[in-house]
Image (cartoon, rainbow, N blue to C red; front, side, top):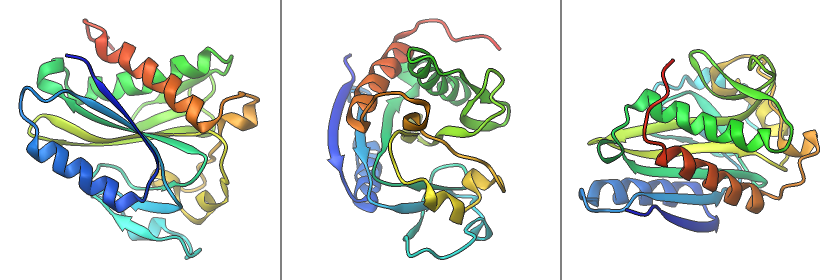
Length: 212
C-alpha cells in the first residue's frame, strides 16, 4: 500500500494537530499511511509531560500544550516539519524502532551533503558530530494511539533560531541548536522536505528492523 504524501505549505499549528487527531481516530486497517510536509508560523509546543519552567521567557510566541511525548520545542518558518501518520501494526514496527528509522532518515539525508550527525542515547533527535555530541539539528516526538502514530519530526533548515534561546530545547538547559543553512547545505525548506520524505519512505520500506 503506497504512502500518501501531502504538501500542506505553511499552516497554523492547532488546526493541523486537530486534523492529525481526526485522521488517526477515523482510520481503518485499510487506510493508507500519510506523510504531511508543513511549515508553521512561530509556535512553542509543550509535550504531555512537558514542564512549563522550560519556557524561560515570554517572547510573544504562543505556547500550545499538546499530546506528543517530549518537552518543549519551537516551530517556525524555515523549518520543515513532517508528520508521520503510520500504522505500526501493518509496518510490523515497535515505537522504538520507528524512532530509530526516523532518525536514520535525517542522518542519511545530511550525509549526502557531507554533514556528520548522529543520534543520542535517551535523547530522541539528531545532533551534530560522529557521536551526536554537538548541536541539535532535528527534533522528533510521536503519539501512538491504537497502534498508529501521529506528530513527527522537524528539521531546522533556514530559519531564525533566536526563539530557541527562550526555552530549554526538548528540556535540556543550554542545548545548542543549529540548521542546515549554517553548514552550507544548499536546500530550501521545500527541497529539504521533499528529500527527507524520500529518505523516510526508504526507511519505512525496509523489511528487517535494525538490531542495536
